[in-house]
Length: 203
Image 1 (cartoon, helix red, strand yellow):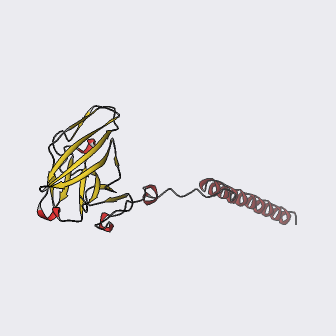
Image 2 (tube, rainbow, N blue to C red):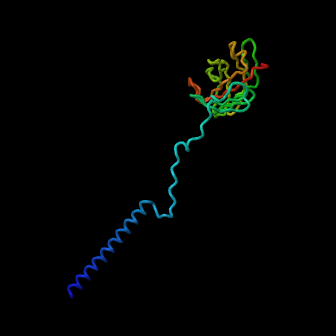
Image 3 (cartoon, rainbow, N blue to C red):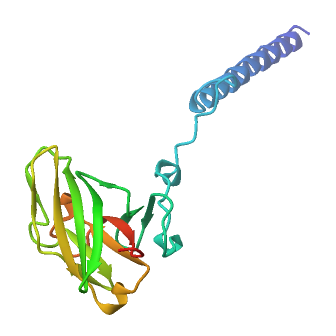
């Protein structure tokens, strides 16, 4: 009888020890899960990282949607190779480092004469159209003027430039005059351009 009691008591102690061991293991596993998940259930989930699409600035509209003819507002758009800012003929075009405005325009003897006001917004002395490639009329091909206009830093100057027009442009309702900012000079295809659209009626 005594031996039976000792055997029963020993089994009971073993069971209790096993139960304690199991509880300890379960608690340890639970703690590990909490630590790996970054905290208890009250923690807020981490905010998702911003996607590449959300980080980009809104895209500029395509120039394919800019119709020919009279402009009623300033338009910035993109071609396959450049960003353009288009304005009506009586408005200034604002570009990095330079502003330009056509003060007067006339067509006579097959030539377009433009009185242009140029402001140099940089800290350096510049010469507008120094290499004869900073202003041109867009006509499938580029029609350039040869006149140059020195402009001191942070000042404006006015000068006259002339372009020889072909018959098609002489009778077109509008003429686009392109301005290249200082930073894009020397590039065969400037990445940034200003375009002043002139209405030829009455010139």
